Length: 409
Image (cartoon, rainbow, N blue to C red; front, side, top):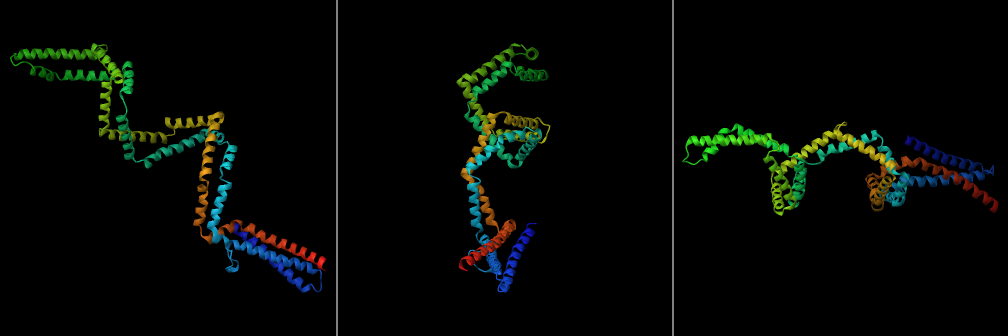
């Protein structure tokens, strides 16, 4: 389509030049018979000069006229790199300047437009899908070993530098005061009672092994049976009675221990020392790897499921944020200001780098192909320069000839 339009424009401009030439020849031959044809001849002559001059000017932009090595011709093929650089500087100075960017953004009200768009649940779902893609893409971007090492190093650094006694004591104290540890105590007591019940022989052997050598065997057996019975009765009582003195004593001990973790220097030092030993354990790396694997898998599955709580929370959060942008003028103004500051900073400090893509792209183009491409886009309009040159030249020639005849006779 562009090529056909360019060819038609060239043919029209050339036909006009040829017409001027024919008129000039005809007037030259008939002027002696018809003197008034001198005016027409002068117009045709000047029209040819204007047409040829503009043909040369237009052609010189893209190639050498008639293939002749005339200086300052084939301008675009020879100087495309400098033209690209000049164009890039022009765009940077007149289109990407800080004042223009800020003024344009102030009229757009980006925050309001963004808020209106995000407030639509369909658009929020679309953004949530893109966020989910980013989350799933973490698997390919992040190395599991590197992440696990980072988590392990962070844990070790935190444990080695932190004074864990006070925070650990506060958490433990709250847990013990609420009785959240009772379930664990129940498990331990139950296991102890079960072991004692199922290991009568082991318990009696311990007792008899410590009996003095002079005591009779039947006495040792009776004492062992009695001790076992008392131990089993005690263990069963601790298991059954939730208010057993041992349980209450354990509660008091744990509360005191939690308090010591917060206030007692010796206990705090021991806790910190234990934390440093734990940090140096090789199993920290294994634990970190497991934590990362579980977190990564859970995030990926939740992000991929449109009905998951995570996905719904993201969508609801985006919709809510969109509504706030459209109703809260303070937040909207702040976001507009942030966007304007960021864009203004880029324009002020990196405008030339941003428009540098023009230089780089044009530098990669072949000179002849560049000239052809540009001519294909703007050549049709340039052919009208030839047409205008022909018409204006003819009118100027007619005016000059008329004035000359009037003044000089």
